[in-house]
Length: 166
Image (cartoon, rainbow, N blue to C red; front, side, top):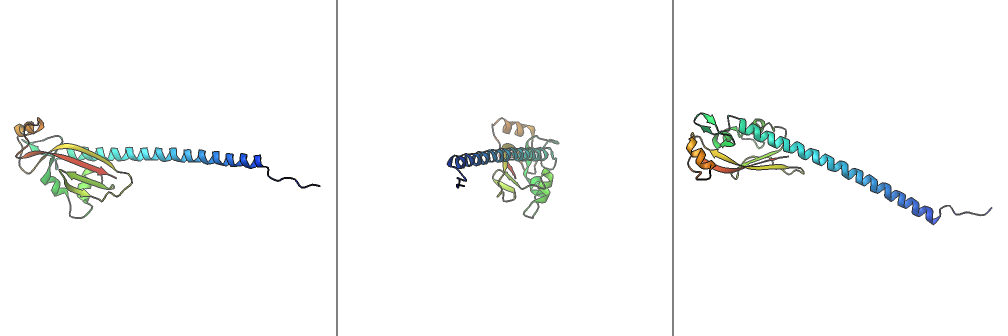
């Protein structure tokens, strides 16, 4: 009996091509599932950020008083400061936003109201222009002038509000 060849060169090439093909297929499946999870997480973060802004603007404890009514997309800075607690996590304001279980960063006109560090992989940020006022009541004329861009002075000013959720 003569000794035969156990593995031929064409068999080794075919097996290596098959293993390479299976590896590429597994890699593409992994990447597509990762992409789907990433998209779902981003959508959840965007929904939470938008819900937090809606809660902030619909809260009577944060809006500007305009002759007994609360102006839409307005922030009363002194009321917002009252919601900010002394601990690093700002639990009261995060609960008012409905984001108690999330990492949140809230900035109004360059002043940090909440800062959870935000050293996260996934962060969703929204930046909008808002009307900001202090304790005093705002007149309709001052609000209209500020909205039309004529002058934002006195009891109401225009500021950037930035919320980041992670």
